[in-house]
Image 1 (spheres, rainbow, N blue to C red):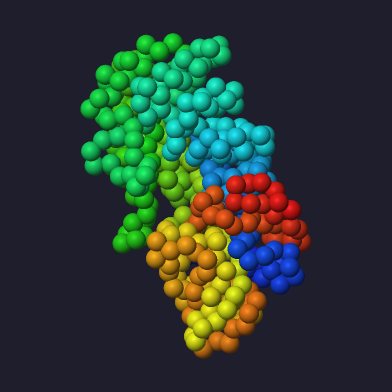
Image 2: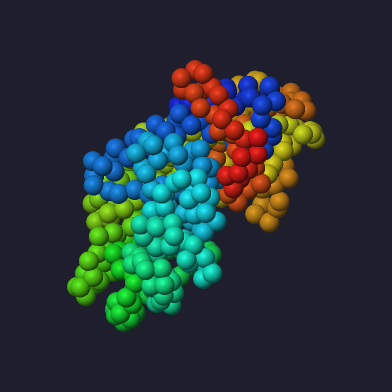
Amino acid sequence: MFIEAVLKNNPILAEIAAKFHKSGQIEPDTYLIDLDMVRRNAELISKAGKEQGISLYFMTKQFGRNPVIARAISEAGIDKSVVVDFDEARKLYRSGIKIGHLGHLVQIPKACIKEALKMRPEVVTCFSADMARELSDAAGEMGLVQDVLLRVIDDGDYFYPGQSGGIKFDALESVARKIKKLPNINVVGVTSFPCLLYNEQTDKLEPTNNVSTIIKAAKLLKDMGFEINQINGPSATCVSSIPLLKRLGVTHGEPGHALTGTTPIHAKGKEPEGPAIVYVTEVSHLEDNRAFVFGGGFYQRSKMKRAYLPDKKVLLDVEELPPESIDYYSTVHTCGNELHLGDTVIYSFRTQIFVTRSKVAVVDGIQKGNPKLLGIFNSLGDEIR
């Protein structure tokens, strides 16, 4: 989906990835991250946020919770993270990253609440009055008052499968009255996801009904006397979407894929953020006009179409795997090209590294002409060499 954008806007990334593979510095099933480009992207997004008055939390799951990349983003101007689950919070907190937003998309497990509060997150999202009560009780025992967001949902909102949950708008007033009585939490805002989605027909990011829901929820809560200072509208936060968030009345965004130039709107290579990630593998075996390359990092929502053969500087068509399959291999059509065992093959697609079994190679200095491998990590951010 993004290999053309890489070859158009960051061809040196593909070149370095091939060199590192051929020299044995990286193995197949490795994502290579251009830290220079990530840093540049973070600076652009941070600048756009400041210009529009939009506060930002950065997401790390898509590049494997990597602490080296997270620190680079923080130093580039987006200094707080949003964590998708509690394991990600642990990884980043122990790496010295400030936790901005915790509990969304995944709520904090009950036994982990006190550990979470010790991290002093800026906000914690609650899906229910029960979760709010658990937070308040734990905060009370610790002598804290924790700011929280409410995840508010309504008919007509859109959620990905497996990501449902929240306080129904029709019940918000009664639930909010219960929460208001809790002594050790303070409701400061609302959130939902996804608040923007890419429309292939219009080639634009457009608001979902979720945005309307949280805007009216914020108004209701303000009318009830809550001091609402955060309307959090994550999904596809990038330089181009930040002005739209401002116009919609959103106060906070959460860049994730924009940091590696891999939101759907980046596929055509026309956005300010440059591509910063490739997936490196090699030919395992051949059969007729097809080559099978090592897998482990392919993602079912990637919509990948082509792969790059750097030895011949050609693009090859890719067979998409059915969702029920394990990605032991990916299949590319040789298209009349002669391929051999061990040949480097490079992909670039929208991924979620934390759900793969891949390795992550972080390389600094690519854009300066002095590439240096900073380390090889697993898909959950642990350095393995």
